Image (cartoon, rainbow, N blue to C red; front, side, top):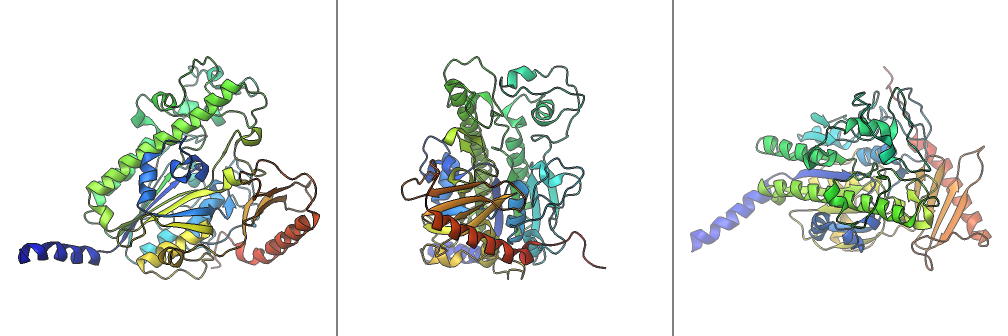
Amino acid sequence: MLAGAAAPAALAQADAARPLNLIHIGVDTWGAHHLGVYGHPEYRTPHVDALFAKSAMFLDAYPQALPTLPARRVLYTGRQVFPSLKFVQPDDQVRIRGWHPLYAEDVTLAETLAGTGYVTSIVSDLYHQFKPGKNFNRGFDCWNWIRGQEADRFRSAPRARIDLGRYSHASQPIPRGPKPTGVYQYLVNRQDWKTEEDWLAAQVFNTASHWLRANAAESQPFYLHIESFSPHEFWDPPEAWYRRYFTRDYNGPTLIHPPLSTARMTPLEVEHAQAMYKGFVSFVDDRIGRFLSTVESLGLMSNTIIVFVADHGTMMGEQGQLHKGETRLRTQCTQVPLAIYHPRRPWAGRRIGGFVQHTDLFPTVLDLVGVKAPARVTGESLVPLVEESRASKRDWIVTGWGEHVSFRTPEWNYIQRWSEGTPGFEELYTLKSDPLELKPLRTGHESMRADFRQRLGRFIEESWSVTKGGFALPA
C-alpha cells in the first residue's frame, strides 16, 4: 500500500516540476452578451461555458482599442494603443486610426516567451494579420495562415456560378464586378465547401490540434496562439447549426451580412439574421470543444494555462442596430469574455468583478509563467485579483475606435467623437437605470458631460507619448 500510495505523489511531484505551457484562444466578434456563461442561455455555448467553469472568469473586461487590428496590437504587446494616428497602407482597404502593423519598438508576447525557451506557434484565419506589410507573426517560430476569410483575396474565379441575389437584402444588393470584393469575394472563396470540415473555424482548430499532436511531445514549454476570425461576419454557419435556432419557413435572402440597421428589414428577416449569428457562435463553440478534447487527450490540461478572450461583441438588434461600429461603443460591443484556466491553482469558479482590459492579459500570463514583463507593457497583472478573489478597483476605463471613444465608469458610459475638425457626436448612458445602454440621455447632466469631456481630453493629451511609434528602428 505504501508503494502504491507513493506512486501518485511521485507523479504529482513530477507533474508540478513540468514547465507551464500557454494556449491562447482568441475569437472575433463574440461579446460577453453572446455567451451562456455570462447569463445569456439563448446562446448555446456548452464547451466554452465548461472551460469558464474550470477557470477564473472576469466579469467586466473591455478592450482598450478597437476594432480587429488595434485590439490585437494591445493583446500582443500589453501596451495601450489609443489614441492612435492614422497610417494608410496602399494595399489595405481599412483606413482608420490604429489600423497598422506593430511598431518596431514593440515587444510581443511571442518574442518574450521565445527568448526564454518557449516554442511559439500561431494558427490564424484572421486575414488582416497577414495582408501585405503586416507583421503579426513576429516572435513565432512557426505560423499557419488559414486562407479564405471574408474579403481575403484568396481566389479570383470562377465567378459565373455565384448567385449574389441569394445573399442580397433589398436595401443592399451585392455589386458584381470584374474583381470580387466584400461578400462577393467571400462567396468566391468558399464556393467549393462541402462538409463542416471546410468551414474556416473547423480548419483553424483542426490545424491547432494537428500542431499539438505533432509538437507537444518534444516542444515543451510551448506557446500556441489561436485566432478564430469566426463568428465575425459573414455570419455563415453550416445549415444544421443555423437550424438549431430557426425552424420557421423562410424564403428570403440568406443574410450572412445583414444591413447595419433593422429599419428596412422585416421581423422575420431580423430573426433569421440573429439565428445566423447564433448558429455561427454555437458552431465555433463546438470546434473549440473538439480542440480542448485534443488538449485533454494529450495530457496537457495538467501543465497548460489556457486563455479565452474576444476582441469585441456586436449589436443584435438593440436600438435597431446590427453589427459593431465606432459610434456603438456600448456594452453589447465592448464587454468581452475573458477567462484564464490554471492547472495548478484553485482558480476554478472564481468570478472577478471590476474593470480589466486587454492590456492586462500580457503581464498576467508572464506573471503566471515566471517571466518578467518588458518595460513597454502598460497593463497590470491580474494574478493578485484572482489569488485574493477581489474586484479590480479601477473606477474608469477608456475604449477607443478610430475617431470615437468611450469613457466608462461603473455608473456611466460617455461616448464622444474626439478628433479635431470633425462633426461632434456625443452619447451618455446612465447604467443604474439603463444597464443595457438602450436609451441615450438626450438632454441634461451638463456638468457630467463637461467633466467627461475634460477628463477624456486630458487622457488623450497625456497618452500620445505612450502610443506613438515607428516602423523602422534607427540604424
